Image (cartoon, rainbow, N blue to C red; front, side, top):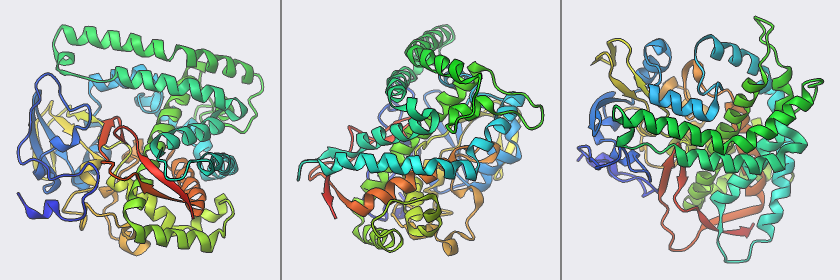
Length: 457
């Protein structure tokens, strides 16, 4: 094995990848974390053909290859039928699952609520939510670990609930949390799902189960939409989605389509942000020099006060910390599997018709052709000087191409406000003796939580 693969400090979830694939009987992946099964060559070559229990697939890690799949020839690489059905069961006709003109129209309709002026308008509510949350950590027993991953889930759930539903957010956020947990449990896929007869039966049962776990949430959202439709003039996202119109056609979204977008916003804007923030705290606890530099910037720019939207451009290192954490631990590390409708060529590799294509941020963000010391935590990578010559598709925590996450700006604003507020007040240390492991189920989280000791600065 190339010795370069093991350079850098030991971080959770990273070990030298296997030279050859490891098959696991009865399942297509390790439900705890399938990423270590990606072979070493995928981190060193632009495109690698890898075998699996279900046949061969192509891992595309090079930025030019990612661009080919997600932008230049995107029409040739749709999601697989199984993935479309799974996404459709959870998100309905939301941006993550819709295609064609429906997707394009909804993307246009949803652009204004996620534009910079709208995001800035959500910032005061976000800052208030974090300020309210501080009481929880103020009351934490000294030298007793708390589950920071769980706390970040609670905090981001409250923040996205306020942004979407305003005063209706707290109770509905709890309902949504139960729905997400039930839907996530229903999405595990095994070899039986690929059998000719049993597979479709299992998928139908899975779709029914997901509909059942969302029934409570759907009923509440339907009532809220009905209440607001006569005069949807509020400042929260739900009101804006009800009132929004396609700039080209003048059409709006139906109540069902609004519901589907709300579910998409909740899952994409809550689960991923919570996961990213958990890894931020873990990485800072392991790198005291980076933590000290972060504290110095926050003290100089904010001086103990809560951050506002206008402060964020002055918090350059704070942003770098978040960006580097998402490089090492992308919230959605595997994106999706695509299928080649026609034969193609990616980075000089012939792709046959019908081939499965895997683009994984986990691989692209650690690819040795484009990142120096890829297993080390170095926020300075994202300074303007260091990022200037980087390939556009080398860093894809929010996806890439026309389907890049519409809420990327909202998520970055949320994470920077959380970090800037809490890091001014607290220092976190990993609980003694705790071994951090990865749990990958759509998002990437610490297995069993993240116990940390919270102390006042």
